[in-house]
Length: 269
Image 1 (cartoon, rainbow, N blue to C red):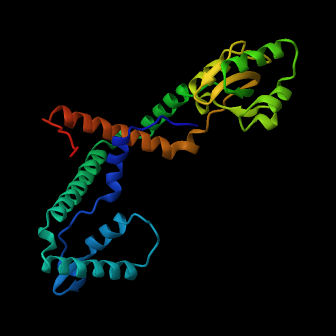
Image 2 (cartoon, helix red, strand yellow):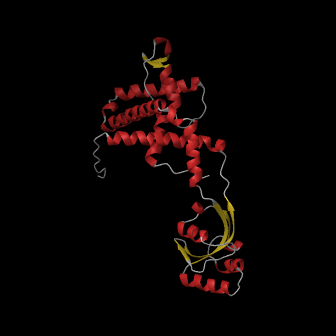
Image 3 (cartoon, one colour):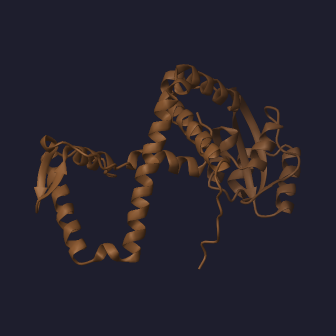
């Protein structure tokens, strides 16, 4: 099943959740290490664990050693005045922005759990199924460089020439050596002019006019069709949840933008 595409900005917004690194004030008993008198808390260690991009399993001791090394480098950077550099200030602002954005998204999602329940997932499932193509196609094609070549091939087919043999002799596509066989495919797997032409054919028919795509000119033979079997709800439940959550994030961002004054200036230098 091909699920609906999620806008890039929503994916980025949802990804913020996995990058959240909030500083949490912890009690003295939650301190797991000190570096030159500066404490590292249990909350900071857990935040560091969850923010790692590689997701490789590591022991708590190894993570703590890594966090201690980072703290040593942080302290040295401040001694050298690196925190005063404009580029460092910009990076620190972005880290804070991402952390707080992630916290807000998590707050919003937690506050709207009722909208992200099983009923919402089932509704999304039905909408996705309704948008799915109902048929898959099995077809062959002959791909050539010019419309004139394609027209000549159509004339030969109308006189009784064998489609597969013509494909082997004249098709420039990679499927030519297999008689132009494309196997079974869904419409969205092909470029639009090709899939639209296939959908108009009956079993055993070939296109009577050449079909142009960015690859060249096609003559297409439809061999068979079959109904698409939708995936079971349970098999794609995690994907559905991601879509539902992302839609909730989109809704929240849209509301925030509508209530805000945003002026976007050119970022080009």
